[in-house]
Length: 193
Image (tube, rainbow, N blue to C red):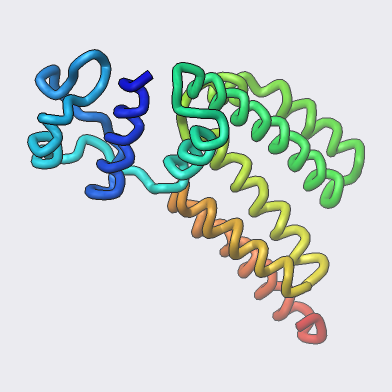
């Protein structure tokens, strides 16, 4: 209803104005599970209680746009995150198959598919599921780039890294592994440049 829409709108305004989607803390700011509009100025004057990168907020905005911001919005996010979890498991299989062979790929798929925290993470509105897919995507693109040495692989790795950094900044360090590998390969075999 109206309260959910106000809640999403309030959170969006807070994110735009302050860089955080932290919910207001303090009973005086809330009425019927929504931030009171008359308390907005007081809320903006309060110090932020959480800072976040905008990637997951953007992900939530897309899900809410596609499936609505009504009472079922959390269920929609959980379903989409479950799909991302399945995509992560399949991508782990592809990576392991390319690097270690089919038998190891099946083992990696089984271990990844049976990992309990992956199931639990998908049921919460946290960055874990989205970031894990982006991180595994970075690794898959690094494997492709290292093997093919095609510019499109490196470009896609850059895009995947940018997307992952918008969820968690630590993702910026992941391509350093490929840089180290390429440096080692170039020093070992100058003709491979």
